Length: 328
Image (cartoon, rainbow, N blue to C red; front, side, top):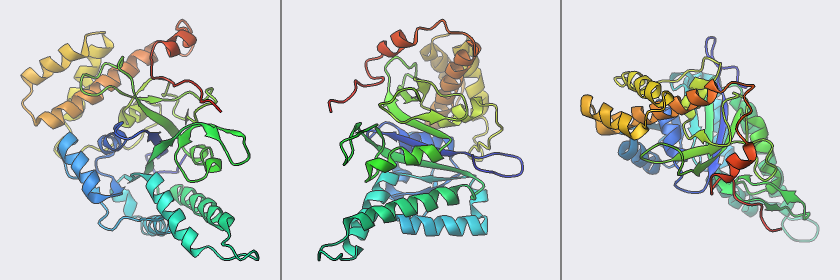
């Protein structure tokens, strides 16, 4: 875990999944004051249309891992990151793949007269290690989104679990090992969010997918809400709201209380909408936080020593969590 500030610890997070599973949306909702590193137009489009605000996006985002490492070095040395509270790398998979294209063109020629293909993977390993080391010295949250790599076989024919999509299967497990939270973004129709039933899958005992969580909050079907996951932990994490939107936590708490009391979330949010006159996107954001908070509260109420839920049947109850093992 990162050292964080004098009063707040910080975390390193990796979220991976198929496209359009709200990975970017959730990072924006969790860390609305963060410095975002990614395609400015794409990130801004999501923030404005789904959440109703304009985020801080680096105007010249890094396109390769060496550029990313250089920027993180600057942020760590200057302490600039502290004013944002978090740094979010949106689509780290794309940065890794771009890096490989550059390195392939720069690879030295070996004795055979051909370019050294292993050199590119050595560069990948080097810069990913540098990135993880720098993340520990930022003093703020570092979150990354990745596309999803399906389980399969590596170059040696050995089974490799699914996880963040990076050019080398050998790195699929390495990146999550550095992270405090590593989850798979999915859709689960049984999750009670009436707008989008996004969940995070986390089961370290599942050998088919690399997932893990040091906060002790995530389960096989965790609300797809990083903000509320961090809030539900026992640590005092810095979780900013946009200036002027502090009221969202009051709405979220009111919704959470009803959801935790087993009131239908659809009825709860309709009641809130009839009474609160706010920007609809901001209000929906607050309600979604409240639904996630209520669901997490219900889970926590079961206690550490309540094993009444049949985990096998729990897995079977959802047709999308997790998928069957691949055919090797």
